[in-house]
Image 1: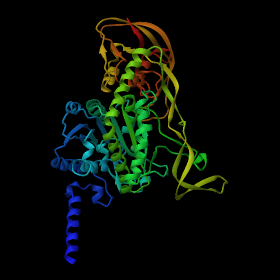
Image 2: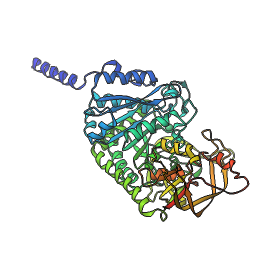
Image 3: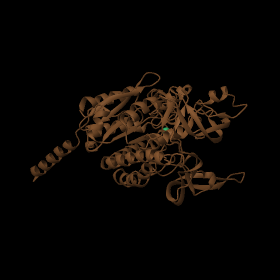
Image 4: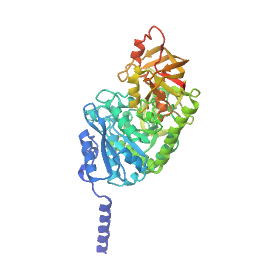
Length: 541
Ligand SMILES: [Zn+2]
């Protein structure tokens, strides 16, 4: 009997070791090794990637570009079989999914779990995630600022890990406000060498929230689509995210909820949550204007690092499970959105109106909010104040302000024409992936010219800018453009992004970001109305 038991124990041990082959030490991440007290440096992330690369033949490493301090920003391409170029990716027929961590260097969990997930996809139990898709990770997008670590940088994280890096990049820019103006080295690298080059169907941006004591491990937002095509948003919001809410709870024990904060000034219990906004300066939102899908992931700041990592890992794992099963459908929806955008221009130019300024309104449906509870009291001045309890409650019928209605609309053009002198504008559009050609002969354009009556600059500096707001009116006009002037045919994939960048009254366009300030000043806008130099036409003769 004894020897029989021994035999069972012996086989059980074999079973255990077979299932849990220990990793070599260089495949253990810095937080795992330090009891979650430390986060990895740039050199440690690179060492981890190199260790993986030496053990797997399914990985291709390249760099999207350099930071200001000259650090190469790694891009890890995982595919089975391996692909080393966008051409090979395209030839495989598999859709590409892109996930980035560390856009804000104090928010470290994305950087850490992308390393764990690389290990599990390439060498562990998640190899099946490469069955139907190509996965690209950029674990350390903001390289420079990651290494400028200090204690106390993010108070809501309560020093877990003890030290973290700086939010802005080394030029002082918030990389998640730079999607339109592209002033950061990193944004140029991302748009040029990931979005345009690899053409991912989806981008996931990994963050940690700053404050609200909701009761979710991770919150999410889709790419707000309000000036773009609706289908990619609808699929993200109505199909993909609800499915992941269920699977992450089941597989990781993580509660996932919509991104947003409430204000205690509105009383308790909360009646509404408010998201951030729709501007395409945020890279997730910009994906919608590129007819692609985007997901914002925000770990709960007050959780300890190991919990935030588990939540973010679970979210990324379940997103990739979903896209592994539905990637082709996602690619089809995006391709159809691109076709629809082009068709809309061809059929409705000069007739259809699209929003250029938006206001946040509640979604039609309310939801049940999971949140920490608060207790009300009156202070010495008789004002109502609240203290947070440790209890998590469900508050029904909460409005979710995450819909954006047009405040101001403008007519969709067949295209735009710019004089030769606007080369700097054209160069910027080309960096975004816009197709611009030079006229080979004179063309008569029938359309509208925007007469600017004033340009109002913000009094508050934001990202090195005093953002501009143009007022004026469109007037019908026929104008002749010459050989060498610039022509943008809107019947192209990025028409929605072009429209948002070039419309003079857009709330996040090139006018907003001061690209035309000098032109307006030189032409005497302070004395008389000035014609906006980007002409929109409805017909070209
Ligand atoms: Zn962030």
